[in-house]
Length: 395
Image (cartoon, rainbow, N blue to C red; front, top):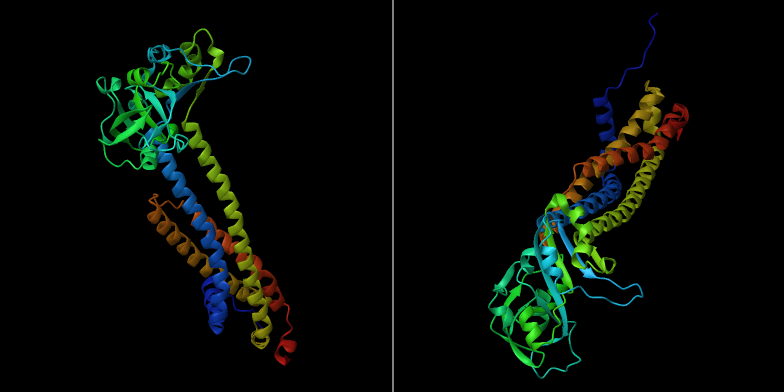
């Protein structure tokens, strides 16, 4: 007598059987998949939005360059504030690898919209002397009007940073401002200076005009240098002694782009926190899937008993319910990945960011859903497989 062997279920058979089981309770299946979808959408959107923000930041960093160095006075041995020599700008500009050097000097003079403004209402704005090469060093464009030149540097002409212009309510060139007890004419308005935010909040005048009308002593407060990219570290090492040969220890040199790099690192840390929130949402969705599968096993005991009495093995029953769990999680994962990508594109378009979704994000999300589906369906599948056909049919 030939030995009876159970029929083997192919992968296609498992998918069809699992799909048939989900169609029995469509509303419950949709709600369970929704929990998975929310978790996956959260994770993909968090990664996508963070990547879009980081892409814009890195693009801005590439545009502005990492070869800008800032030289400022430090403190003396006794903690007293110091100043750079008047010759510091010329000496720094003479360094071989330095492509351009520009400087500003704090005059300590506030700027007002009219002569009737309360002297105490400075709105955080101040007047700075600026060298003609400053904009080349900062790579800051002029939004309106012109920049200071050799002719206007000695006249009562002023160029406003973008924040200063906004706070003073100046929209066009030719308007008058009250600085140091005299009227000055606005000849230009700058665009934003991401690497020098202090320039955004300043009214910039020529060194000559600052000395003549504002009693400026001529000592630069900050020197900005653009160097050959391959020589940044070497130039950074010699700038203190170059700017102040007598007291190099009283000179500080920094790279403004380091702040943007730190901001990118902070964004990455914040992304990790949000990914944790998405993982919690995914875990909640997995619990929902497990609950759905357990209830499904209890409700379908007669079906399980009938399949077992017709020859289905425990492995086949176990595979059926595990396939249902994986299909449920997979559908939720695909929907969540699409939803997360759509949220990323919508947010990036709304805020002007470049839409960026790393390929590993949806791939990792789908892998996570399959893992969650396997874990969530394992216990219900094993429970269904252990059911006795007689007891199941009599339930």
